[in-house]
Image (cartoon, rainbow, N blue to C red; front, side, top):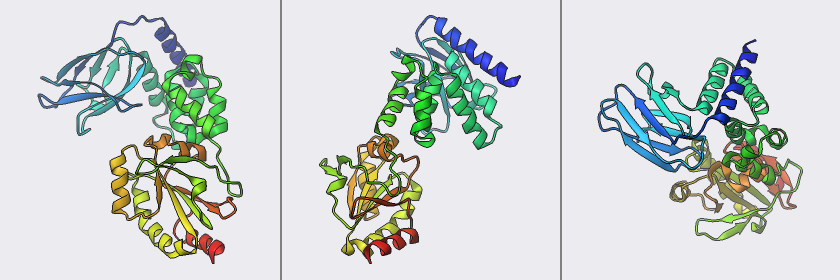
Length: 333
């Protein structure tokens, strides 16, 4: 019964959203405990673009700005993110009320997309992690016209895999397929090859730190490790010292590393290379987790890697520490 009520509520919200005329976006907000003059920033979650900003005066703010495409998921936050709320905005008069809650749980009205999203996540809030993932797949399947579904599928595509992602994507409305989220999903489906151990490696090229194109197939060695990492990845940085030792031990025997960074900031990427003394080949397209190579290889989390032998065959994946050393002994000694 609870599920039927939720589905009915979702259908009603979607219908009303389609019927409602656009009036232009505004957000009338009330907060508590925020110092006068504190600046709130409105940021696009997809592009990280700053849309607008506003000062809080006497725990109130009013923001009005031109939006070309809505619904749009944004983050409303202070500069240090001590106050933070993600929400879906539309070209409507919206309200934000945090007088009886913390900033993150403020009551937001005026956006059917936000109400749909909040209703769903309240519904699954007490479920286990596994049950939540199942319900999210179910939501995407049952709501192919909702931009919330496109957002969820874009986020989980590499985790759910190409087959399931394509199955859900094929049910999307044309509007959803042509949304920025839909385009991200389509790009993943197009690029992903998801090579397995025992299969040939998939070639690609990307720019290095100096802006020069480097191709994986140009790296010559008896064993080549494609290492996926990022400067802001704690486990990656913790693993680097061991990888440096392994490289120094086996490089003279034909071991090479082709490191693919999932960074978005070039300066941070280069700084991490220097700080960790990573003296091997590096490439990055500055697209974060939408890195072309990571989509080709089906990377859903980092650090991750693929070890390729001299015949171009993948002989191991996600090898760390002694596992990598053992595999290199088999190949090189």
